[in-house]
Length: 282
Image 1 (cartoon, rainbow, N blue to C red):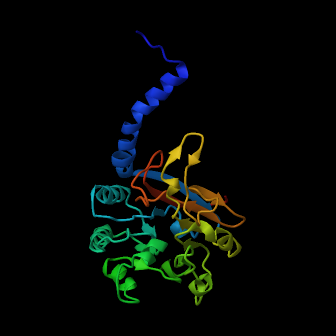
Image 2 (tube, rainbow, N blue to C red):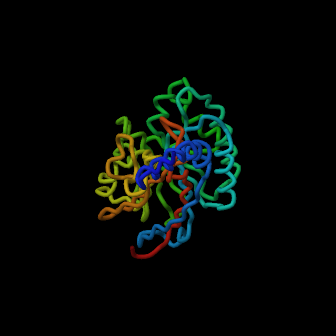
């Protein structure tokens, strides 16, 4: 007896048979298939000394171990040779040994970008503290060659050719304080805000930051053609991934490196964003 299936049923059977392969791809291949994306941030406020500076932006490592993905990230950064590296939070996964992160950061710092490595914390970094002692988290980062900004600012360059980096603690859990972060600083021609969650974008635009770098959303982690992200974490608002523009401010939201909740990525590869700062009108 020959059973003939309708076209719609044949498609369903094919899709059903492919599902295990798709699941394996989303679990084993894409989460480790790190993509380097290249961008330009143009501003008339940028000092000439920083024209062409490449900023490498990483976020959401969610480090479970110092493994294949993390080593690939270091290899790609070594090839790119950025002038400065920034990390925007969610370094660890709950219950994991912080020693893996310490080793990753120390190997990262060996690349010695000209203007250093800067970081801010995300909400997972407070849910699973990197260190038990209150206030010791900055030492954890500094000993690993990374400058951690906790509602404070730093500056790179010399004289009039300076650029300000302002880093706020996690806004998703209400630990951010932009007023404190800006306290004591004098406005430089160009200022970058580092924050884990993109929900500060409107406030950053009112404050006239030139560039905001953020993560948190993972780009949705799992995306479907025509539908986009199936899920975004609270605090993402309408900022899924990529570029967003206000009246004064540009913001880039990276898809991040690691995974959260479920260890899957689909049509949403891990991302190292290389952003070239360019002097000129937008």
